[in-house]
Length: 142
Image 1 (cartoon, one colour):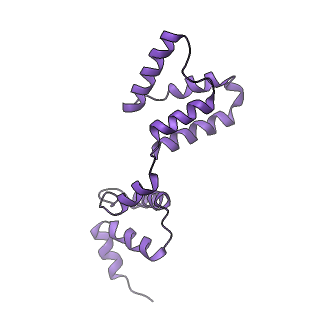
Image 2 (image 1 turned 135 degrees about the horizontal axis):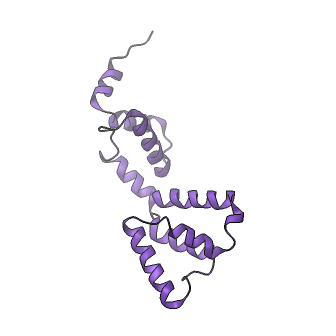
Image 3 (image 1 turned 90 degrees about the vertical axis):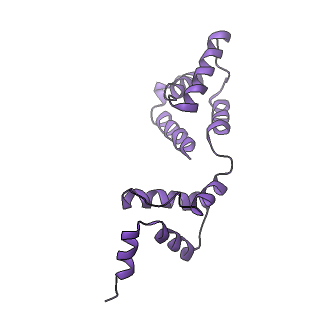
């Protein structure tokens, strides 16, 4: 999920500032400059070592780079992963703010492709902190 978000941010910036990116190689080097953590750093290190040895990047076009990036950093079974998260306590609010919980919950529901309202509401309430669950249970109408 984070891979897609990162790539979308890069595409947006590149699209908004086309004069800064004179060719596909500049785009690729620019994106690599932001890939600094964990697996992304390893990917960049290997890419730069190869570029130093061969004199060029392993991708000629931005499209080729995007495809490899997606293969390496974007989940292949995103729907199933999101559904599995919603079947565990992994998505529960815990010590997070309600706002953060809501944002992360809706992102999971979207990725899981859940559409049935009643089940979504039940999962949402189940994931709230017990204090908030109790407060909601005590609410009355009128």
